[in-house]
Length: 239
Image (cartoon, rainbow, N blue to C red; front, side, top):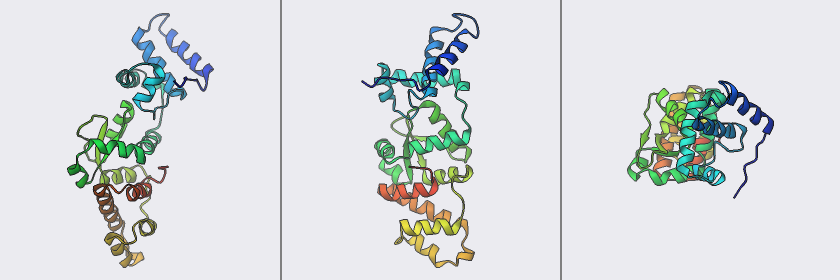
């Protein structure tokens, strides 16, 4: 079993003591203390926000269900202890959830019909991260969709593209994106149509449509390699 080691024990201890004594000795309930300890562990990095509930549960020697509850209730109670700009938070969440391994895991929980309709299954176990990702979906005018597992959100490729555009992850440069698509899918009809256009007259709307169509096809065909390449165009920070 992997031991938990604090990255900054002094900062952890000082913050815990400060908050524990803020309202007076023994003012916090036992549950508040548990939630505080857990949030400080994640803030320190001793427990990674990107780790699954199962992995964290094995470290803390509790059940995954209890880890999920600690994450949900801990951030509801002590959210102010983990300040994070919305843009940075969303970038961190997207980089974690759009990995090949995570998408492969999420795909088990979405129907074949949904995949054919262009829905990508995104697995997010951390309740606070899931809430922020769902809000990003809502902010671009879409709605989160759930199927067999509440930890898995089904999201269309065009919604991901809208998120990337809204938060400035994808720069709408028609020529640059067209060249990237040319390298990724040179034989596709969408790319062939783009290459036939005069570069000076190439519109972002045309490139966006091609990206959407290629993304929907990649999801429907479960072609992981092609999908990963498209996602890296949309979110350049994905590892």
